[in-house]
Length: 230
Image 1 (tube, rainbow, N blue to C red):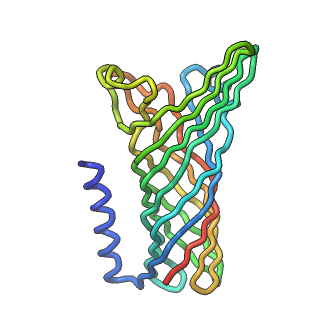
Image 2: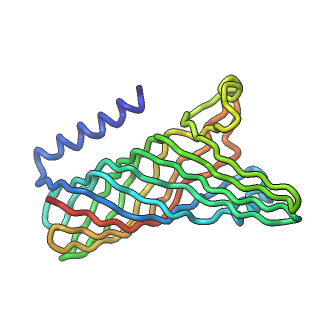
Image 3: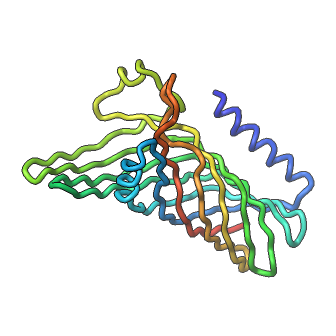
C-alpha cells in the first residue's frame, strides 16, 4: 500500500506542474541493453560473478509527458513498463551455467532536459516498482544437464518464513528500484529520439531480516527510445 501511495503522490505532483508549465503528452517505445553491477563482501566471488554477467536485450514502452518551463528547459516524465535484467554465462572446471534474468518494472522517470535547438541533454532520477519476472537456467557438468524456470516474486524484505513458503520454482527480488538517468536526445517535429544511460542505486536482492546487505546487485543499462508527442 505504501508503494502505491508513493506512485500516486508522484503523479499528483506532476499534474500540479501542468498548471504552470506548457504540457505535451505522447507514447514512448524503446529498446535497451541491460546488465548488472555487483558488490560482494567476498572480492573473489564478486570478480567471478562480474565476469559471468552479460548484457540482455529488453524494451521500454508507455506514456510520456513533457512540461516546458521555457524554450530551453523542460521536465520529461511518464509511466513506463521497463524490462531489465541480465544474462549469466559461466564455464569453468567442467561446469557450465547459462541463465537469463528478466525483471519487469512500472517505472517513473523524472528527467530535467536542457534543449539547444533540436538537441537536448537530460538527467534525473527514476523510481521503479517490480511487477513480475522470471529466470531461466541451464546447468551442465559434462555428464548430466538440467534446465528450468524460476518465477520471481517481489518483496523488499524477507524472513525465514517467507523462504519456507516458497515453491521450488520461485525466488525473491526486491520490489523497489531507483537510480539515475543521463542522456542526450534530438527532436524533429513531434518526435523525440533519446539515448539514455541508467545507473541503478537499489539492491535488487531483498533484505534478509536481521542481516546486512553484504551482497548487492544493481540494474544498469543503456537504451534508445522514440517518443511521439501529440
